[in-house]
Image (cartoon, rainbow, N blue to C red; front, side):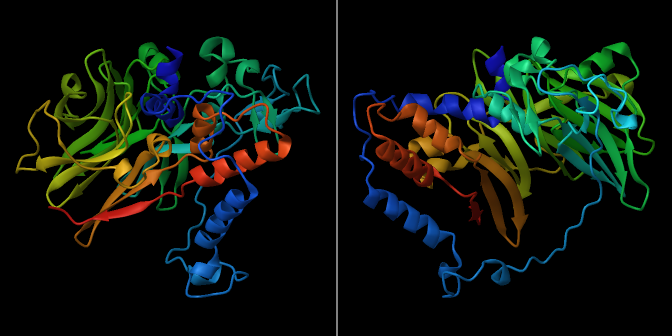
Length: 437
């Protein structure tokens, strides 16, 4: 159960994916290349050369990168999450009123307001309004997958198994909190919370959602969705786009994750993950319901399957493309292509789409490739562009698990091995173009 919950995050899914290709090294054996100062220097020089200004326009090593990268956009902050809990120290109850700056807490003056909703996960625009859902403390939930110990810093705290929520969620998700949903009026109206689910059943479903990581819209209806907290199902919530009123909710029990939605000629598609005894991968769903008919609000059908956890969707050259995360022991981050989208949209189908690319065509390191996820997609000027998702330190931790250092090494050799592994396995995010058939 816990692994299914953690598989919603890339950490557990991708770590599981490395095993079939690499065996753990015996403790009394040296690593494939015993770390030396020369090896370490080569890696350090490579990182320094690759990511320094010396490789840009022939500039000197000491010159900064910034002058040569002038962004065409000037972003500014529209909104910011408010404190929603009184933090009273690791393991203590969350007592006190945020509105009073937690001064009524029995732990005051050490008590302080805390922001949990730190991540905008699902986001969609309808007219001048932005509808979005949140996830709470994602940094802690990612680190929790590795069994980390409680930590408190000036900017964040992760309680893990010491959290008051741990008896409900387990230690790895002890910093989880129920998500929140908002509407932001870009015309000047600002942010307003979306109406809470009215029925007890819908309220329980909302409270038992890991986070609202997915958003789509069609007609005058907005869908916010996310994986169930127990990893068994996808929870979907429908809102009236004009009023923000909650309409209804449902649980798609055949799937366990959901991300991007895309509207093609007023037909809505979304990607999901499937985890059954017969198939581990993903599917693309077409919305076939009618928002104006209550009994048909949540009708979907599969229009294709992919050997991976569907991540991002984009229309390019008349076809839908999907980037994936690994799902199961033999899949890799990859790019999949649908048949040509006909007039009236893609028909129902459980057939596999066509795979046009896989991460190990780019990265020959099977361990690092195995912990790389497919990223965002965009079609522009005749090309399809896609990126990757490389969680910081994940490839390093994976290498250390599969090729652990020899405990008999001295401190200098141990440190050299750790640094060499860190630098040698690091990957910046990639962006790759594809023109088509």
